[in-house]
Image 1 (spheres, rainbow, N blue to C red):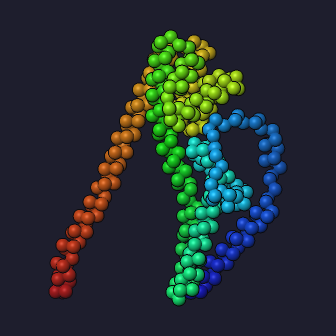
Image 2 (image 1 turned 90 degrees about the horizontal axis):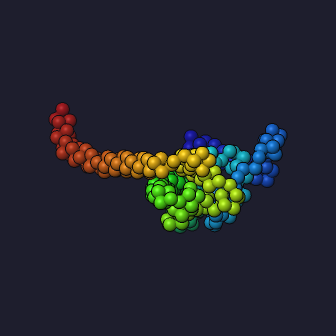
Length: 300
């Protein structure tokens, strides 16, 4: 039975390898509808978030980018997360392929070393462990990207609440909307404020309104609060609406939301801390009750 399972797994791995090699050598042709839609779709605006293509894993796994893109990877949600952390999609897919191949080959190399040392572990070990490590290496970059993007979004919301306070104070001092936005962004520091400055600089270079680029930045970051800020500022810029009270209310709502999230995270951490105590308590009960239970079962 073991030999049959081993043969099936080896055959499946060989088939997947042949398919991946064929997809890399002869990429599939795009559908005619997709080509026509791409040619008629208007060119999207230049992204505000910067991306850097670096890393040895990206260079090694670059040939696997086209087949993974043909499979529809990554998804829309993960694409936004990659834009937030500044990692190109091609680099991410190349890292996924490199880690998956490395995880698949690592047990084989270990098996060869152990065989040379006279301590073979059997054929099943490199196959099973290689598949597990390959899946883990393929999924790990996605989990890391989501975690980093969530942290950056949280930090951006904290910085945005402080930025709104500065804008509100500057507006109360008699400055205009554009001056308030640019002066407040020039004061702050950090990644979040730098992205706001990039959006405002892009508005000046493209000769467009700052709230348009702020709305675009909010969509790229998937931060709805920034899009709401852009909507409020656009009312002030186009219709002369008073936005000082609105900005102050939004800053207060952001802080309240952040406090609620912090309390939820603290409660979740407290519950996680109680889990080891419960495990120790159950182990202690088993340690105490096992001798008595053993005596009762032996007496029967």
